[in-house]
Image (cartoon, rainbow, N blue to C red; front, side, top):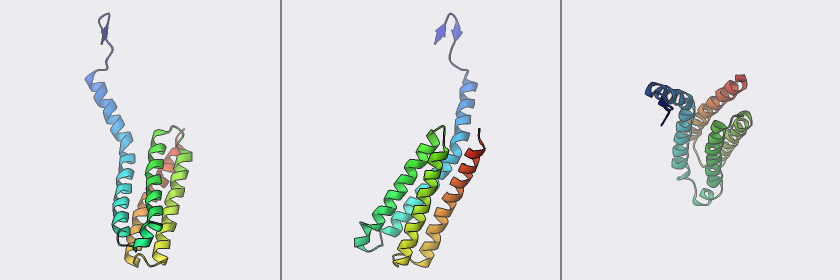
Amino acid sequence: MTVKGHDLQPAPEARALSRQGQAVRYAPYQALIERIEELDAYSHQVMHQWPKIERHVLAAEVRATLLRIRRICAIAWKRRQKSAALFDLDVEIEVLRHLVRKAWRLRYITAQRLEVWTRHIDEIGRMVGAWIKHAGAAP
C-alpha cells in the first residue's frame, strides 16, 4: 500500500525479524503444550486399561482436568496479566497429581506407571513454576 509515494508496509527484513521475535516468544509456550500433549497421550493409554466402570468416573475427571490444563495454559499465554491464570494452572496440575495418586491407591495403575505419570506431571509443573517466576519478575 502506498500513500503519496511512501510504502506503509514494513520491509521484508523487519517482517522476518518480527516473525523470529514471535517464534522466540512462542517457543516456551510451544514446549509446554508439547509436554501437555505427551501427558495426555500417556494418560489416554493408561486409562484405557482401567476397569470399565472407572473409565466413566475417575478417567473422566482426569480427562476433564487435562482439558482444563490446556485451556488455562492458552489463557495464560494470551493474557497480559498472566499471574492469576498461571496460579489457576498450577492448581489444576496439583489436582491432576491427586487424581493420579487416587488411581494408584485404588490399584488401577502399577507403581511403575505411577512413577512415569508423576514424572510427566512434575516436568510440566516445573515448566509452569518457571513461567510463574518469570511472570513475577516481569514489570
